Image 1 (cartoon, rainbow, N blue to C red):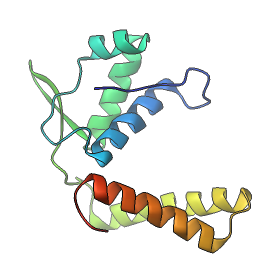
Image 2 (image 1 turned 90 degrees about the vertical axis):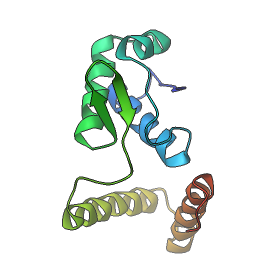
Image 3 (image 1 turned 180 degrees about the horizontal axis):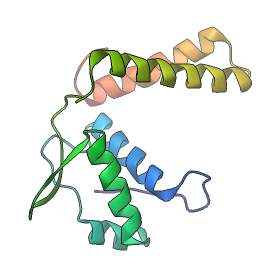
Image 4 (image 1 turned 180 degrees about the vertical axis):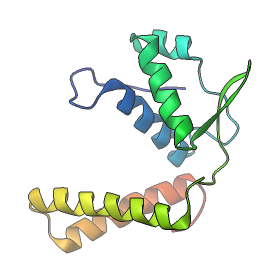
Length: 132
């Protein structure tokens, strides 16, 4: 697995790992059932503390993105959320709200925001071999 982190970023390292794994899954770079690097291997690749990687993996597991198999390691989970439809919709609404507010403060218009979201959605849909 190839992840990059930005030590100078204001985002904590473990959150960068979480998002990087999620991005790799969303883009199809990591497929369901694929084994992730061990905590030690990834920590060595990224030159960070193994506890940081362990924290990221624990977060990914709690979100249902990965599963741990005793003695075998961590694997990308099948695409299904353990969350209820109501909770999933609530979280989506929160994410969209954050995006709209941040884009507004960057002085983007509603049509520009819509176009950017659709373009990114199309990109991920084509990576997955599906249509939006």
